[in-house]
Image (cartoon, rainbow, N blue to C red; front, side):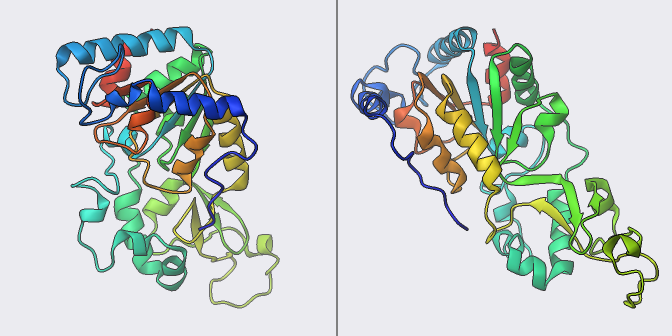
Length: 309
C-alpha cells in the first residue's frame, strides 16, 4: 500500500521549533509511566480521580476556546457502540477463522476467494444495527456549534454521519457504499448484508453495454459487487488524503481519539499538525502520548460527555 510522506514538505522553522519545545518543556510527563509531577492539564495514565477531573476541565477549556478543531479517530470510537476493533484482546484479530482477518481483508484474497471473503465480511464487518454513541453525538454537536471543522476517521461504519456529522473524511472508505465491478451500479450495505454468498449486480444488462452478452444470468448484469472500503494492498483515496492533510495542517486543536496510531499511512497524517493543542484520548498508550498537550486515558464517550462546553 503506498504511503504518503510522514512529514510535511517545506514545513516552517517555526513549526519545527514548536515540536522541539513540546519535547523539552515537560509535557512528556503526560505519557504513560512518566515520573514526577505532571504540568497543569496533563493526566498521568495511572493518575487518580482528581487528576482526571483536572484533565476533563482542561479539555472543556480547550473546546470552549477553540474554533478550529479537527478530530482524528479510530476503532476505539466505535467499540463503544458495540463494534469490535481489529487489535484489542477481544477484537477481530483474535477471532478464529480459516484465514487470519488481515489475509481475508486483502485485495488478492477478495479477488481469488470472494465466497470466503464475503462469509467473513457479512458476518463481522457489517454491523448495521449499531447506533452512534456519546462520542459520535458530541462531535456532531461540536460541528453544529461551529467549532469542529472535520472528522477524520479510520472507521468504515458510517456512525459519525448517523450522529449528524457533515464533514467526515473516511480514510478507509465505507461499508455503506458498494459498487458493481462490471457496470458501476451502486448498492447499499443492506443489499450486501442480505445477499446469499457473493452479492451480484441486479441492474439491467443494457446498463453495462452487454445487452446481448450470454453469461447465463438472464437480463441482469450479474457482476460482482465490491465494497468501497480500502482493503490491504490497496491505496487510500488521494482526494481524502489531501483534504485530511489540509484540515490537520490548519487546525488550532487536533484531538486524537480511540486509536493506537498503529495503522499507516493513516497514522502518518498526524505529522502535519502545527497548531496549538494536541489532545490524545485513548485507553492504551500511543506513540504520540509524549507530545500531547493533554493526555487522557479513558472512555472517549464519557470524556466528551463530561467535557462538552
